[in-house]
Length: 388
Image: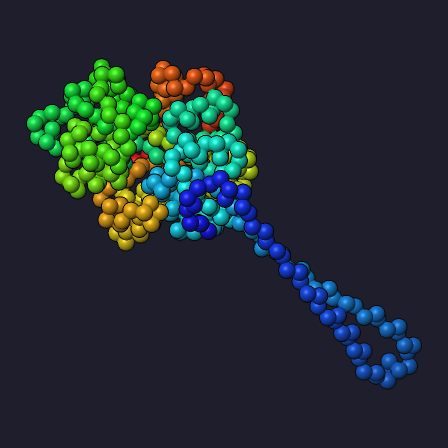
């Protein structure tokens, strides 16, 4: 069962429930079978000794197998749509998994809980917190894609320009941004957004040092664009849709244009869960089924009613209204659940160059961090999908 999100994790993570098994009541002994009536022939023969009474013991019923309880860090974001759908449609229940989602303000806050085994599932964003955790030997495996910006499909994070600026003929190209004030989620350079932007800027001969960056939250960018405090922003949904409703922005490009197939974050499993192969595979099977249902609904391969149902699931899980979910640019995923390791390696080097990952990660440590073999095992069972 998907439990209600909790406001915080510390004391609540240690709570657990015990199941009591009721003993079967013993049954009454079976009655001895009566001897058959005598016949003349039988009367002449010596009497056979009576068979001892046999007591039939009741058959013990097998106790129901309790579902495996797993704890997952989440932030009410659409990137977890695979789990939202897997829960709503019973895929997790079919795999014998009871998933508890525990709210954290950001992914970095969840890292200590993952490191100490207070969570089994979390995210591994391509940011300094994740790379520093790998360098320290955190017992975490990055197993699956949790949001990849695939070419030709608008993703949920993009660069937008204030409409007034656009109408003046400014901000029409990526290189034009160096003359504008750009809103970038705090702390700016040290974010996954900053890493993706740097990759695009490289292609036009610029770096983040050439930009006039204003560190803001995604929510604050909406007002800053409206009142002219910033000229452009690298903003994420649902805040992009809110600014679009106000008529204050024009979309310039998305992360899929800055770095095609950029993996924003991965699905991470604590080593204990990763090594529990039957449970881990069940979790990934349910997750991939959820992702594929989402991709099919979004691409129109299913009915309008199915897409509406999927959007309702996202709306309930993220506390957004269904209308916003319907119009926003949603996250995208690899249909086989495989992340882009190269984009993660690029961000590692980007943050190393900035001095935000002081301790280097060896090739062996990076190789040990990846647990995509788990996904490959599941794909061998359920089949692969062609890249769309």
